[in-house]
Length: 83
Ligand SMILES: [Zn+2]
Image 1: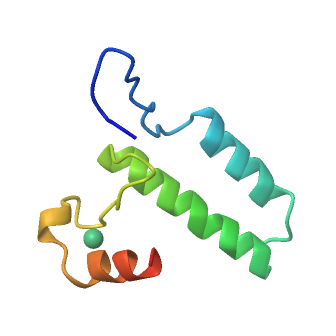
Image 2 (image 1 turned 180 degrees about the horizontal axis):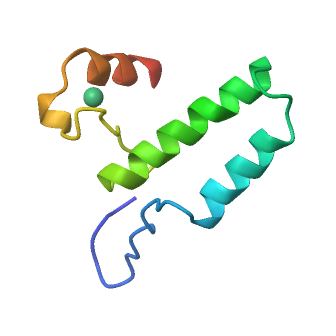
């Protein structure tokens, strides 16, 4: 897969209030509050919002520090998860 050339269309970045955030929120609201599924969806929603707030594409690491260059442990942990 190449990321250049005239046919390349960048994926739209996550944004607060977009259809995906709305969908995650709706899924969470169908669950009993504080059930394990609710908490999983809540964590996903948090992660999605972190991507939105930091302008990070979903296939890249969104860092709570706001800057992946500043992140040590969490970046390596995320890289390991993907292996
Ligand atoms: Zn990080």
